[in-house]
Image (tube, rainbow, N blue to C red; front, side, top):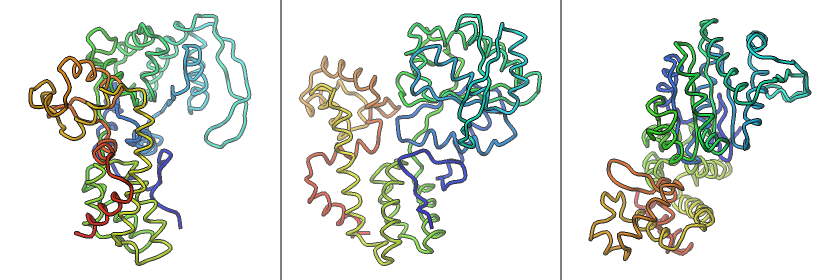
Length: 397
C-alpha cells in the first residue's frame, strides 16, 4: 500500500492529484482554441503537476512538444532542446521532412535517452547551416504550418519560460516567437509556464514587450479549501479505510492557506503514522507535532531564501505578513506601525515584488507564499510553544 500524498517531486498523471478541475478545464480549452497562455505561479504551488495532469488527459488527441528551460543559458542550448524534443514526438518523420524542405539540413544520428522507456537509442539531430535565430524561427514556423496541414491540435509547452529573457535580454527570442505565432490560424497553441511571477508578468504585460496583449495570463493559486478537504479525506478512506475528521482537515488547510506542497507534506507524514497506529489519526498531539515540524522546517528555508534581503526589506515583508493585505503602504497608520519611512517602503516594495516575496492584489499587497506568511507570523514563537499552540488549536475542534 503506497502513501497517496506525494511531495518533493511533481505528481505524474495517474497518481493521486487534488483535482484542479477549474484550472485543467480552462487550460484544455486554450489548447483547442489555439490560445497562447502564460501559467504563472511561485514555486511549489503545483504548476508542473498541473501540466502533467493536462498532458495525460489530452492523451493522443493532441500532439505535444514539451521542453524545460531550467538549465538553459544560451540560444544554442535552447534550439538543441527543440531538436531533442522533436525526436520524441510521434510525427517526427513528417516534421523533419518539412524542416528539410525549408532549411539546409544535414541529418545526423546521435545516442540519446528515450525518456518514455529509459533506454538509449539513436535519435536524429538537425544540423543547419543557418544561424541559430533563423533556425529557431523556422523550427517554430514549421510546427505551426505542420499543425495547420495535418489539422491536428499541436501544443507547445515551455516550462521556466522566464529564462528566455536571460538567454536573450533584449527580447530577440520573444520577438522571433511573436512574429511566427502571429501567422498561426488554428490548431497551434502554446503554454508558457514559470515560477518567477514578476518577470513573467513583465514579459507579457509590459507594452514594450513582444508578447504584450498576445498572451493570456493564468495564475496557479493555492488549492480551494473544500476541494483539498475532499481530496484528503478520500485518499485516507481509499487507502487506510478510515479518515481524519473533516473539521481537523479543514482547520489544517486554513492554517497553511491551501498550500499544495504543505498539504502533501503534512498528510504524507500523518498517513505514515496512521498506517502504523490506527488510533492516532485524530490525536491533537500528533497533529500539533507534525505542524510544528513543518513550520520549523519552513522557517529555516525562508530564512535562507531571504538572507540576501536588506534589513528594511525583511521588516516590510514581516509587516505585510502581519497586517496584510496592505492597501496603502504609504499611509500614516501603516508607517507608524512599521517605523519605516515612505521612501524606504517605496524602494523595498520594488525589491520584494521583483523577487516574488510579495504580490499586488485588488485587496492590496500581501505575501506571495501563504506558507511563508504563516512562518513569518510565528517567527518569534519557540518550538516548544509552537507545539503547545497547535495542540490547543486542534484540541478545540
